Each structure stands twice: as C-alpha cells, then as structure tokens.
Length: 237
Image (tube, rainbow, N blue to C red; front, top):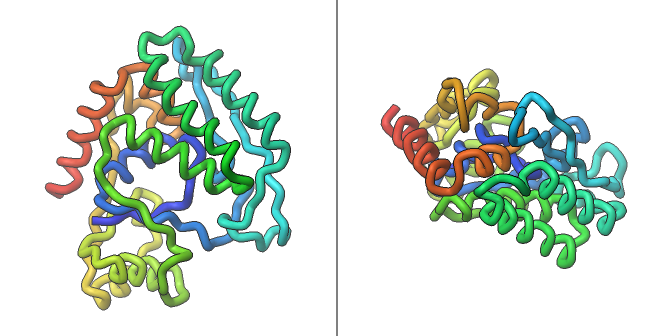
C-alpha cells in the first residue's frame, strides 16, 4: 500500500496518519511549488489552547519563479529560519512532559538545515522524523526518480504501479477528483483514508494544525496507538 504526497513541513496529523498507514511514501517532488500550501510552512498551535495558532514558515526562493518545481525550491535565510524553528517549537511545547520526544524531532530538522539548501529536504526531514517517533517501518521514494505518464490520475496510478504497490491510499481531497478508471487499468485498487472525527486529543484538530501538537499532547506511545488504530480501520475498509 502506498501514499503519494508532497513534502510537507511538520505535517498535519491527518497527513501523518495517511503516511503512517502506508508501506511506501512516494514523495511528490516534481510538481510545481505552491506558496499557499504546506510545502514550506506549518500551522503550530499552543499546547494549552490549540485555537491559539501561528504560522512557522521557511523563507523560500523559487529560482524559476512560479514554475519552480518543489525539488528545486531553495531556502532563503536558512540561519534565521533555523533559529525560528528552534525558538518557536520550544516556546510552544517546552513545558510539555513529552518535550524530549518533540525536541528529538525538532533536532533532526535543525540538522537538515546544516546539510542542504533545499526547502523540500527540510520538509521531508520533518515528516520522516515524526514518522520515526511513532515507529513507522515503511520506506520512501521520490517521484522524480520514477517514470510516469502525464495526467493527474494517470500519473498517480503509474507511480503506484511502477513501485509494485497494489493499493493507492487516497485522502479526502484526492477522493474528490481521482479517476478510478486510471487505477483499475493499472491494476491498482484505490482505498480511501479518512482520519477519525472525534473530539479531544489528538484528532480534534487533525486537519488544521501540525502533528507536533498531538505529539506534545499525548506523547509517543499514545500517538502511536491512535495511528495504529486508524491504520487498522483504513486497511480493513
């Protein structure tokens, strides 16, 4: 089972849960960068009051202007961004009893600033660090390393098939536009992934704030169990 998703910076819990459910994350890195998306920014929430939110953004330069692909977007002012990541995450979650786990995730991202100039690399690192914290055992491959035809659904079906995945895990947004014929022609089943709609941590803000809040609120073991339960429901659908 694979999920195909653009690199997101400290992704929302709904995105993290979909990737956790998949055996393979195909990082969609060769499509156009979108400034109004989550490729370079995360909405962080206060631990005590998740309605108190603020954006944490990576200043990003687009060498080819609006046509720049995600993989080609470059960090601008990386040192300032690095300090902002470190300071804001500690300010929001440093008082949590689960701060050591959150700090380990953040530290992995801070290391990436020293190793790359690519915004996508930092975003990927943030997602992989969160997945590692909750014990994900899957693999990752970038779409830019694979061959697929043009066309939204055709391309997604080809990417799934070329990695020998038999199932494409599709989020709520994707279910609105996916063309099932493209997948059936490729011999791929489409399985919807819908995160639990429950009140209380960690799911009540799963589609609006970064999963860092959930990790700080319920900790590694609590979040892992919630994600495993959500994955079991999706796989049994």
